[in-house]
Amino acid sequence: MKKFLPLVALALVPVGQASPLQAQASARQVAGQTKPSPLAPGEIVAAAPKADWIAIAPADLLVMDLVPDAQGAERRVVIQLIPPPFSTGWTGNIRKLAAAHWWDGLSINRVQDNYVVQWGDGNAEDAAKAKPLPAGLQIMGEGDYVVSARECPETEKGCKGAPLPLAAPQPGLARDPYAEEAGFFKGWPIAGDGRSDWPVHCYGMVGVGRDLSPNTGSGAELYVVIGHAPRHLDRNIALVGRVIEGIEHLSSLPRGTAGLGFYEKPEQRTGIMSIRLGQEVPGLPVYEYLSTDSKSFALYADARANRRDAFFIRPAGGADICNVPVPVRRASGSQ
Image (cartoon, rainbow, N blue to C red; front, side, top):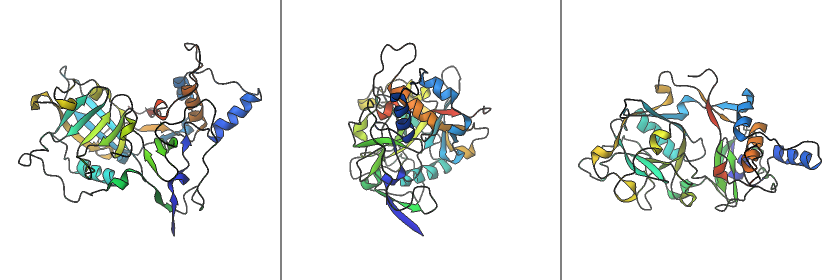
């Protein structure tokens, strides 16, 4: 038998609030029993034990191969799809589009510096030239940009009936200006208002292009954030993933010369050779992310908010959700 619980039961680890590990560490520091780590965030990540890392299933990866650059070098972008319960209709469509090899031969159509890079069918607005979409794609409503409740198996940890309480605030960390709550769920930046929760537009996040409301997009047109976090887009567009490798192949492309960074001529666009789900790509490395429930992540988040390594004169005393990017790496021994 299954239960439905408010998403607050997903146990976010808030950026502006202390996880139990952080609260415990702060109490020890106040008592003079421990001192804050002088290590840089990268050093903390490098020292994180293997047990603190979680492998990403190949089926949850989207691999985009662009045409080689002017020097003939390969350009590969790897995207991790966001897990349920978020954006499931769109990610389902994206899996169908990738399985149908729909993006093969299409292009990067928009590059707006400090904002987004967008790809898909450059002829989508011309009914006579537009590439037909695969059959069976879902149509989502605007209410699907957020999740207010979910189907919760009884066997899942934490699904005992009552929502799990959020941790108490930790002095010094910034409160989110766009939401009442902000934290992490299964390695993803999430915001909420106590009634619903949603993914947030941080650097590298991948979203679904759409027309004017009530259109919500199918997932055929995608974009990635390449600049300052455009958090005003939260809850207005579906977020479906994040780039975990190769974003430099997108962020370094020339800006489009038309409005909003669109390319005016087809020859200005960068071609897409293929987009595949990870299990279809031979020799794909194993990727893993640092568990946001781990002690290592708690130390890393604290170090991002309060730099104490040698270069810094004074700690900033705070960090917003997008300034604590979840570390992702190739697994040891993976090429």
